[in-house]
Length: 360
Image (tube, rainbow, N blue to C red; front, side, top):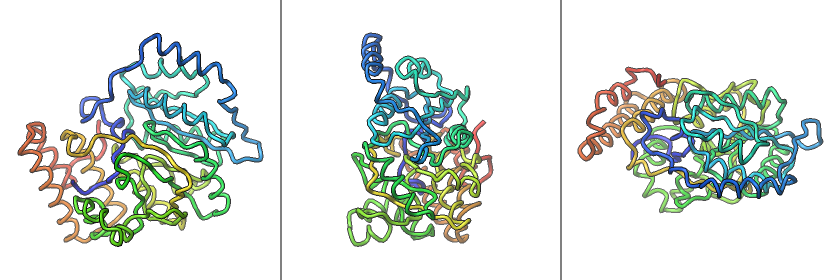
């Protein structure tokens, strides 16, 4: 496993250009009859969809979902949000240039949901920024950037808001994330250095996560809120006022490392990130990195190079070691897969920062 975020997620995959994605969404699984039944069922429960009240006593929470050809996942996510205890919230779906009928499907089933169409694939950072700007324009107190392939527990936002109101230094919060392989999305408690990269972002983590005493050095797994260095990007709960100081997601990256960059940005201005395990979500997650094609891997390498060049400066020796791990991992896959061999030159350019991070 190459150095890079260990919590690869569907929203990241959905940010890939259509001609370079490594994993496709499943085909449409709902027939016209099933869609009609679901629409009828949802419209029969209008009280489940609260009307946001920006002037109410409860803080106003804006939820941003990025959708790219994944309307089925988005549908399930919105369904879970409708069951939340917290009532003063609003949801916006940013359709990131879907090439299927996602927008039509979502509008038919959830006519109450706001949908912003970008009409092109902007990537994870820029796509979510569209929703964040909408939240700030509508005077949100908190912004919940949520992967569309997640479902939330009924008390998730209540727990976030309760914690945030008591801890004004908390600019960014993340929940406990359940999935088939949960250690992949534990928050990281150590500062980013070579040791953290090797133990938390390479194949060594498979050993580290199986030894409780060592695992606790790198990951935050306890049941009490705790300050952390980095949170998984599948669910990021922001204090809206913090964007005035830290800015939005860095749009220089098209895919991956966005959450690591945001954590570094907020630390630079004296804010903190917290793990709030009382808030819980379920994350379907993407296919394992081993099954991803070369383009997906290369985009990750580009973002990693950008992250270590602009936000966390490692020594020249440390950068060489990280790049060597990247190279060996890619070369191993190239021996097995023609797709990796075909893009070897592009990978080398990305590895040494010889081409733009952004994808045209």
